[in-house]
Image (cartoon, rainbow, N blue to C red; front, side, top):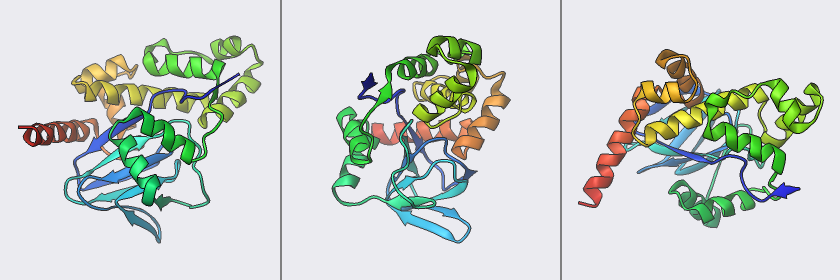
Length: 236
């Protein structure tokens, strides 16, 4: 049985910095410039635009216009195309993507449909993924996974990767990072976010955060504070 829903929630990360270090996204993402274009690069390949869809797993730096950017991580969505690095979004698709970046749930669902996600996730994988995203401290083991899926270990691991796009180990790390990012967005300190997300200490979180996001948790927090202050001024 399939579910017409993401297996775990998408996350939007605001960035208030001129550049992200070279990193490889775990999942397909939308990169939106805040007040101007953004650029992603890999060797001689350079894609620039106000709204980009970026392929996962490709190591690249990001250059932002003044004001920074926002990144919408589309967990579990296969990259829809043959582009090696990224593709510019425009027209009606760009409008839907921008609404999704701005947190409109119905836009997120429509964006996934337009990008080719039709079948949703198997219910057993969705249950496991949602539980891991909501409580990364659960630390589900491979043995527990195979028992939950009622499959032999190798088959269970292949089934999990086919459904989510990530290996079981990478998924658990990504789930912990997403949880930590959401905790920080909600006001938690880096230390609290690291502990609650299952990292051994703040240094462990910082290393993994930079590897996957291209910036440190401290830089991310600064971006969150800056964006919050800008929002307060806009509504003041």
